[in-house]
Amino acid sequence: TQLLEQSPQFLSIQEGENLTVYCNSSSVFSSLQWYRQEPGEGPVLLVTVVTGGEVKKLKRLTFQFGDARKDSSLHITAAQPGDTGLYLCAGESGGSNYKLTFGKGTLLTVNP
Amino acid sequence: KAGVTQTPRYLIKTRGQQVTLSCSPISGHRSVSWYQQTPGQGLQFLFEYFSETQRNKGNFPGRFSGRQFSNSRSEMNVSTLELGDSALYLCASSIEDSYGYTFGSGTRLTVV
Image 1 (tube, rainbow over the protein chains, first blue to last red):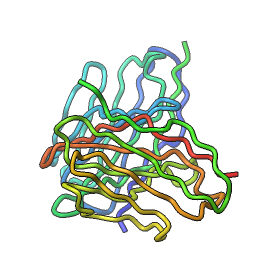
Image 2 (tube, helix red, strand yellow):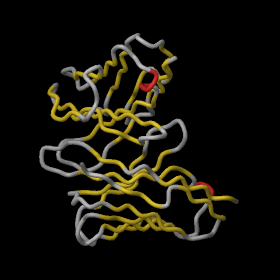
Image 3 (cartoon, each protein chain N blue to C red):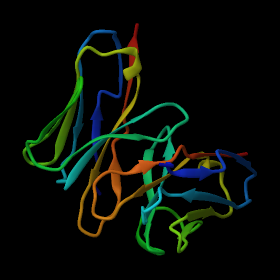
């Protein structure tokens, strides 16, 4: 069974601080996706990383895929209250799997 | 461009009843997946359909079933509802051979 462990589970910070969220597994994934979910809504895709060692930047968000394609991190610079939400990592094994394995998420609260 | 539409948004059912949830994917998306989200277990994969064929099924009892129609719309059915089936049920659609999924806002099912 493939598992994705996310840490930390909860994070409460002040506006302007930096933070990093981690997503780790013992399994290799063909791609790793990051989503943000707000209360009462479905997850929204932020980024997909597919190549080991890949780094993608999306404004203040930086995503990295580990060299072995088993782990990933999300770094937010100068967090804002609008960044508040549940951040979920999800791995796709590829081939004929057709499913995402989700971590349990990091609930981020950015206080003004 | 319309997103993924799930109906109904909220549903209250009694133990032992059955329920049908509906999902209309983004136009042109032929892959539809279903996930169950609970506070304790997070997002768990139910099943995935492509061109009316179920390609993968998660580890859920046979009370959970689904289908996809020729227009790619999908339904999932849960029979003999149990209290533990209370959850947010999310549908996601994607284009074949691309990474990343678009989720609907979900159906919040409460079993009493």
